[in-house]
Length: 431
Image 1: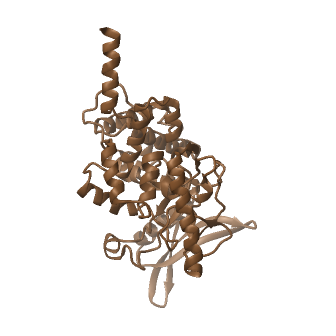
Image 2: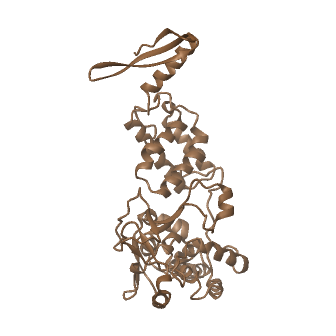
Image 3: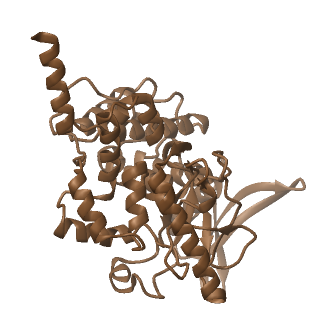
């Protein structure tokens, strides 16, 4: 125990008090930390105790008294920030700030028990959070508790053997966006409104005929497409890294201008690391071939005015990740040794970002199909394949899901043709 000494000193201005305590020795010599100028003994003792505590615990926290809220701040900064990609950090931060802190933040960390955490997951389930959301939340909690044990905040993990509630009816219906099936006649109208050579045509085709996610569509490069064998390699997705210092007012007044902030687009691995190869139709291959030739002619025509893009590190085109998850592979206009040849670009080479689909979606909702969103193309694609009798494992592989349950619980729709085919089978079997 360090002793705190209070001494009275005399100066030209009168008597003052000084605190003094011993700190670590250097080269075997005793060292002291002192400060004087206090008017009373009480004032000097109070300041001395605060100084002692700060010195002994500098850069640390009092682990046996830390709250859950403060612990998650420490864990996020010292562990998560080390190796997680920006999108994961954003999702973790949302879960911590919006779910964990409001429900558990005021508990002391040492008071957490498995029963308390299990009750928390059940409460989230009853409030309508999906199974997938709860699986992610459980993983976050388990990881944080392992860090707590490894760094001596806790003796054992409170998250051991946590279970995600499944076989029970939640008090509130699960929060999930409806999955709409876009009929073929509606798609005809959509492509009439956004015909070939419009900026939304290729993204719409890729969503409808390949079932690509939005980020996968706009992260596609020409090296990912084999027009001879008619396949597309899904090697990455493109995502936006926001300027976190921007205010809501900045976003409303400066978006789209030269003062839009320091955010940027970057490449990351596909969602769930779902690297895959998907076959495309002859017609889509011809569409892409025509688009590639148009871009090559445009680049020659525009010359030095043609916009080009580059990456910080080389892109992978062999279905293997070469992406450092903690460092975004930023997309730049400044030249590097790693050029990027996007599929979705305008005539002058400028990148067509995923935000383009916000405008197209608004038009489609207002004039063609009120239920439309880009992800509905993915739902529709899966349903069309199922309707046509395509093998379940093939659909799972094409969509890039880890298990069949996700594929069919979320993406398969019961279409009119499926109902008619089922009716014929029933009549044939039971009549």
